[in-house]
Image (cartoon, rainbow, N blue to C red; front, top):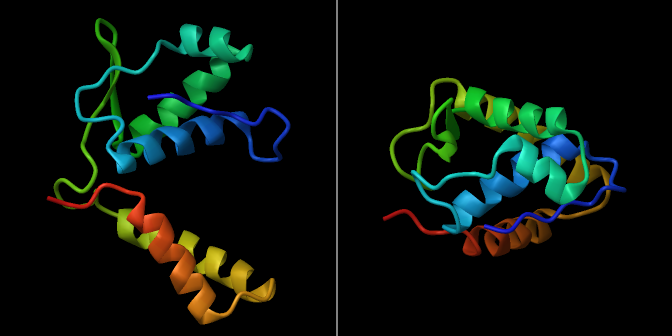
Length: 129
């Protein structure tokens, strides 16, 4: 798994790390049991504070995407599309989607364009088995 960050982006770095890891899982580039770099290693690779990486990993842990063990470090907890969503996930996801769709509407994207773009993005993710 290779992470790419935009250090000049308005999106916080910890959020970019979280998002890139989730995308890698969705694409099948990271699978259940795969280790993640240590917070210090990833921070050194990007020249950022390790607390920033720690914040991203903690967010992923809270969301049930990774597990963190003192001995084995951070590892992917689940493959894409396996098992039911964590309790509360669907409601949270729907609220985020509502805001994204409102933003698209405000900026002039029509329904067909939104659906076409969603389908194109979904096509890049690993299909459920």
